[in-house]
Length: 196
Image (tube, rainbow, N blue to C red; front, side, top):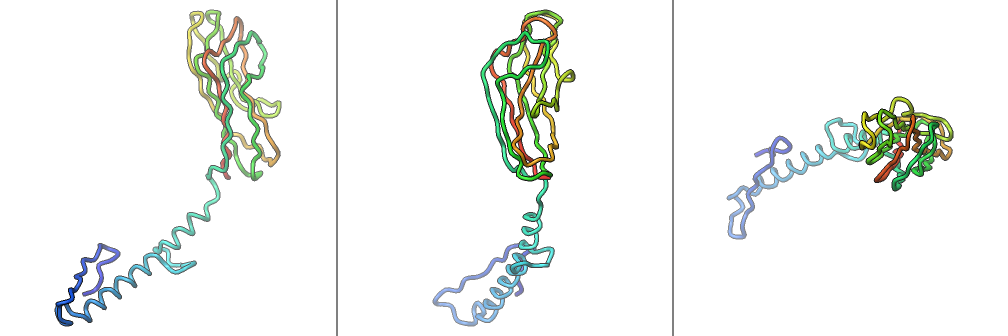
């Protein structure tokens, strides 16, 4: 009887010490085991197999994928603070990351928990700065409330392509259009290097 593997698992009969060599058939038992071993070898594949259905080949293809991998993660988490600045100023959430390749992208995620403004109909703006240049947020990322001191949380991100292997500093910035902006709970920034 030939092996059923890999389409399905075999159900092999184990002989006992009292069985004769013909029941179950000794030669059939060896043939079944040999067929199963050969099917396993074909499925797993020899080292550096070129057979596309072998596991060795498939694993090698996965290992060769270099893009889209998470290469490193850096984050900074800070407590609340306030500002009355109408120009972008740094919060105290900042981090430095050094990309391992110039082709890498850096996904920067910023979160602010429970932000409010003392003035009604006034905005609180957020931005991500990389080494003195605003790369995400700004006027597009803002919180506006019709009443004073209404609270919300804000999360936004930017996929940066710095084309650099130098140390890069990312900082969460903010400003208000008027009044006093307050982050009551915490704010954070995270940078994730993604292989290109």
